[in-house]
Length: 382
Image (tube, rainbow, N blue to C red):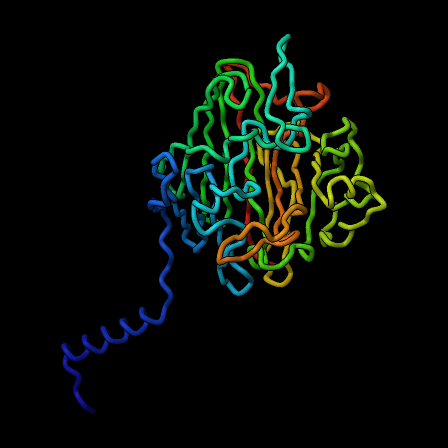
């Protein structure tokens, strides 16, 4: 038997270790990275932050509008791909988009005729949607530059801060808003919203991500299976303002209490509500009031990829919008024209037009109080 000398043995072990390490995929390193994104027309620099967890999920968020630019999630084969609509560069967002991935405020959704009253004072807001106020107005929180702070800890976290001055977009009170994005180890994105004010005001913050779990907007979302853990929805008038009625979903085209393909009843024009929304653009509500613990309100499943997303929130409602107004005019990532219903939104929030409906859960924020809300988007595969 040929003798192997200690030095030669060490070389053999080293070679085996090298080949083994070379053929074994390296574990992604969790963390957060900052890079320059571009510059606003007034010369202010805009940054983009990449959050990455140990499993390989990544989010790219810019401090312009707090916008989620991209978000990767695994399919059943472990392949991570983008699942949200968006633009390739800042210029795309500056040209105007239907709020892709942005923070919405001060008030997400609609306020009738752009008016509400606090005490004896009536406030007038911009009417930027069928005679109503939508998503904070002409320059809502989706179009401002946020201060970004990278927070240290076990999970990559980005905190965004913005001070909205008194009477900005017609809203009373100087309001300090904070939105914190935390990417958890179990492929969950936690979004925590908070705000304080120096005068009575109204606030209803949310995120406007457009999801397509199959291919980030190259195909439609009609085959996605949606479940909404909500017993009621809010009927609207022809301008999409709630009538004040809380209507049970059971037995209607709005019943997603079991996983249901979005396209199954989306064109059922026998329901006037479908006509008003040109599909689904309504608020589904829970049987509870605002909770401090996020509870499951929705889930979304794409059978082709196996991607499964659950939505947990402390909010009492979720606006499901089926991308009815996408028409191919907005060119998205990779030169993709976003066609009709190629993305959907699940915007956790308080009810639309709450300031004008005393029976709805209040969106009033007073000095000395703190507005807080948490929503989690949790990804897995089936």
